Every structure is written in C-alpha cells, then in structure tokens.
Image (cartoon, rainbow, N blue to C red; front, side, top):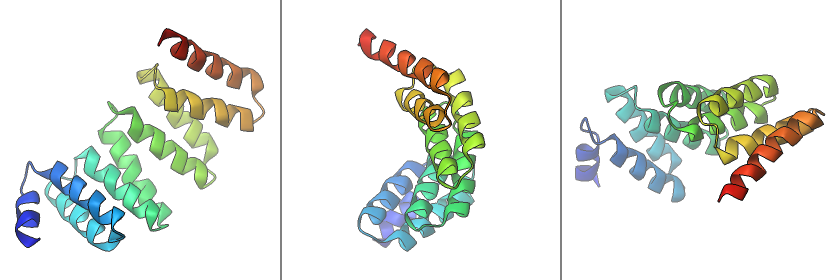
Length: 149
C-alpha cells in the first residue's frame, strides 16, 4: 500500500524497495516495479542492488538497451558482487556483444577467482568461439573448485 511505499522510499530503505519491486515483477506488475525503482534511484542513484533490480525488470519487458545501461551501472557500482558482472555479461552476449561480454567476465573472474557462474560462462563463451583449449582451462578450474567441496 501507499504507507509502505512512502516508508520504503525514505533514504536507507532502498533494499525494501528492491524487494517490493521484485514482488511486483512476480505479480506481473512490471510498470509499478519500474516506477518505484526509478523513484528510489532518484534518491540514491549509487545503490547497485537497485540498479541491478531495474536492469532485471527491464529485461523482463524486453527493453534491452535500457536494461544494459542499468546493469552496467550496477556492475560499476557493485563490483564486489560477481553476480552483477555476470548478469551484465550474459545480457551483453544476448545482444551480440560477445567480445565485451567475455572481457567483462574476465574482469569479474580476476576479482572473484572462484565464482562458478563466471567460470561456467567463460567456458561456454570460449567453446562457442572455437577456443577449445581456453574453454577446457576454464572447465578444469571449475572442476577443481567442485573437487574442493
């Protein structure tokens, strides 16, 4: 309701907005979710989780150029979270920007050497590009992580 939204949009409550927007997305109310995310970003434009949530919301609406801008910003602001770079790279790849996608994943992997999703994506990208030895290297690194578990 209105009261919760007013409270959630106060500074410091941005995670509540992200959660509410995700609930709206699940309910098929993307326009409402996008609206509150954009309101939250006006108050705190440097909140990586909100930028990421907006990017995901826009992907669901097939608005990929706008989604890429939000996902790029989330990755820039929140490089401590490998998921932001991974999702940004996968989205880049989906619009044919494969070289930038692979470069982004390499940067994520340099900072998060044990991120399974990033290793798996890099192995897949390299295999698709015909770089089988490089793909095998990533797959072996992934297998070594699994062996350590």
